[in-house]
Image 1 (cartoon, rainbow, N blue to C red):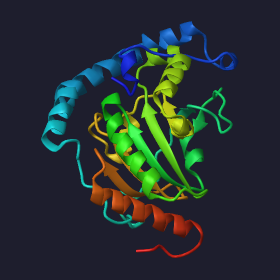
Image 2 (cartoon, one colour):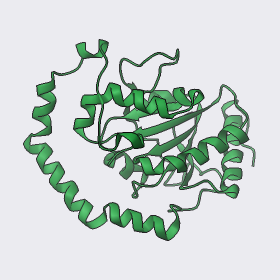
Image 3 (cartoon, rainbow, N blue to C red):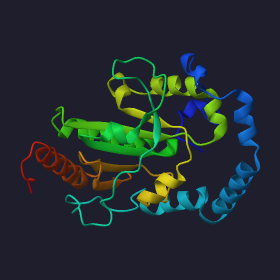
Image 4 (cartoon, rainbow, N blue to C red):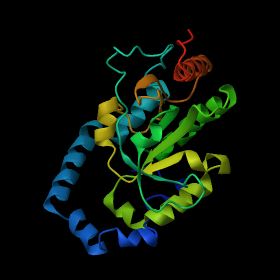
Length: 251
């Protein structure tokens, strides 16, 4: 039910020593998990699962291979309804900028500010191979510079997983290449509100976005990266990076 390393299955994770000074006691977490509001939310999700749940999503992937929509062939105009400000969420970096273990969350919005970002979104681990096709292609096709960055956003849903956050982050780190550790941001939160804002209906599919320096969505893709979509992504990234320098977009 979440974007966890396969070897973990339904197991979970928790917090670091220094952060314990800031966190609520364990019984506070448990009281929240079993509160009336939490029970009502679980009931609502079960109802949603019955109408548009995992089986529906799996069947949709079987029909289209995860290609819910074709990637944009050009940069989205700022007047386009899809060119919204990318939703913010509190995330745990896999490592800090200095390569150390993170002791607190950061704002995804702050992470995106001032740079052109390729942001991948993974709500379930089944989508991880799809994410890799976009990240690998971007790394190979787009010349690295200080105006561009990759952000791999993963959601870990379920209050119980928060109890084992520290172990989870270490496990994810062990499954990622060393040069990608600084790219990974993990949100220990329900993804529904985030996905609704971006119209990401199938949780088993990877989604990818190019976000401009003002944190606006300027290009979208999903599923496995196709050759013509990679070309479009590369051109859009180069154009947005050029805008960052003060020039006009290249078409």
